Image (cartoon, rainbow, N blue to C red):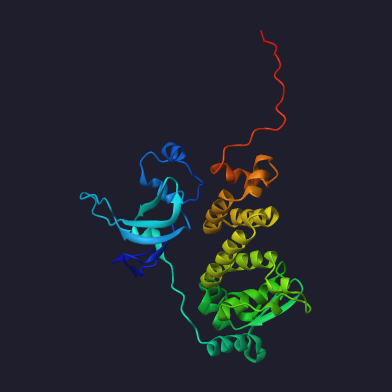
Length: 307
């Protein structure tokens, strides 16, 4: 039995996620050897956010008194599917727990019934209200905000002039019940396409979840971004919107997923080869593919000597 970064116990066969490290898109054994000559360091560089199954260390070092955990991933990262970590470099992937529908309905009613709301968010196009106690239970950042001597705690008002009502509504519903309702982002009855949360709103919710350290909302929305990447692998505009946002917000799991999607996307490869991607996305993908050749190479010309 090992302890993860949060002190939770886990063992062989449990699902874990790499939680510490610096993301770098190393994908070939040559890059690995050049950047990480001492072996397992790659595990701290190239696999941040990746999920796999915990296993016993296949080659334990008798002189090393600290524990190692082997993690077998669902796909190759670098030149192999298994890397080793200290237990505290990992975190358990929480299992999905079924919540009775009646309980979820209660959480939704708690959000929508404003009788006992005691905090108001001042937003770019209106207001949304919630309960300090619920917000503080979900996030230590909110707990600090609503405690003396903070102004927000005394006034019960939080100003977020850059955040739309729809974004805050989706964020709060995820925080309260873990679900979403299309009415939160729809302004009028519309087509089936509007049943899917707009990408811009989803990215704004991720930003709020990171800002206020609401882990359950961040986990759900990151998984939604990863699924959106998979479903739009040939839609380069959507792909690079997500990838660019993941780079800006340093969402390791989404960056890893974006690299994985690019491997099998002909559209992304074509845009990369013709250098039509956003600069940050173009640069990030150089860890996967060689730099594209310039389409218009400057002609060679003889230079004059200085002396």
